[in-house]
Image (cartoon, rainbow, N blue to C red):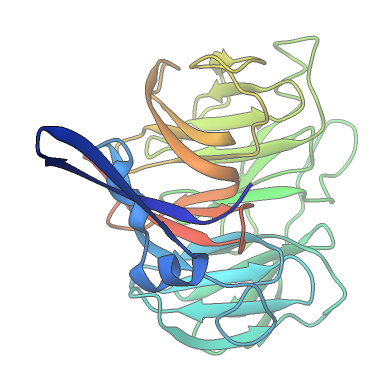
Length: 313
């Protein structure tokens, strides 16, 4: 399918309705910004698009994760190569730096309000100075579980108070930035269902409730800040409220839950009821929000862009 975009003009001449169609090439579309954003539902529209394919500054190569600091700076991580690029809130490239191991696969990146960037690779969380990329060492932690230590981190998310939620694909733990244990959920999904996978993605709302997206079985589970099971929603399917290929999850400042699925990002309330569906091209590898409640989505579509959405509050 062509990536070109069509402009359609309608006019009436001599009582005859005429449609004039003009196709815009991709390079012209990019120079205009996001032309199609005006056709999205009023709930969300794109107001910034970052990235073109490439290996130079400001270009992306298999991006899977991004994060935003309190000043609106955007940190974008290439999946391979170890590169972290930084853009200002207008999308202008600022600088870039690399993690110590360029052969490692970067699984996630987060940034806190104290100027620390957390990068997940090789099943560990490493810290960097946001302003310079200076390494600050591996995040130390020792999670106590009934059977075996939690020592292989597969996914992480920051909480509203700056703690780090993480999972090994079975258990979930929350620790402080210094590595102190705050909460542990031991086999949380196995305790409430017989069907659970090993690919889990996390999000934490402003009340401390923990959302666990099981991408294998297409279900979101909600637990309280104390680790108590509350509810679940989702399931396999293409109808509203179901998931065809869920990959990412995030919670906004209003505690609405966003799940990145194939060709759409669905929005739920805290009880699992569908509120909105945002149409997108491709799959959202990662979702996140800034202090102004704007959503950032790392997309699998052409150019592997990072899109910023203004959200109706």
